[in-house]
Picture 1 (cartoon, one colour):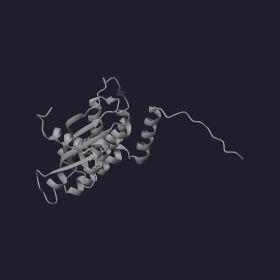
Picture 2 (tube, rainbow, N blue to C red):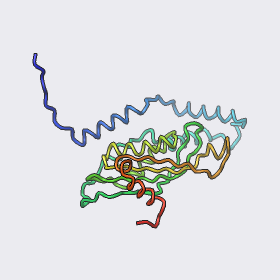
Picture 3 (cartoon, helix red, strand yellow):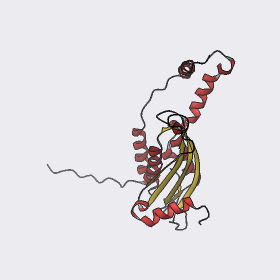
Picture 4 (tube, helix red, strand yellow):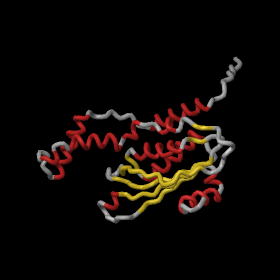
Length: 223
């Protein structure tokens, strides 16, 4: 029997965006959340474990406050970075040079000790016919930061989603942060900064582009 060959229509940008969103959704684990009451009970247990009196005035409302704070600090699990990058602009008068958003401040939490990671992110990309609103880059940073993280993973996640959705000629991401798990516990070295970076496309294959990105990040006077 002869094989039946079907001609399928080419994939549109919307199809590709949907595929990327599905990939991100697959990577996100399905977790059944406990109730607010269960969360507050767990916090009371931790407070008792510290040795404090959970009935004293200063701690009576603490479980409710901590539960509310957790929903805010870890709201990134309820947000989709792909959706944030979904609206792009093609009327850029042929602009195809570097777009750099510097000094995006963030607060995250270490997935190993659940203590803060505080720092800033620098994101650059080389457009290929379209750009995205600058605030969207900052929103993507916030979404990944508001999850339990390692700095290395967060650096890669930001770069990968921008590359997958925008399809630029290259993406560069640099993250500088202080980890409270080093400052508050263990070795207790305050002021120590960790630097991570990742590059895709032209930033990886063309050394001059990587050097330019790093130079622009380091020298605020360069234009």
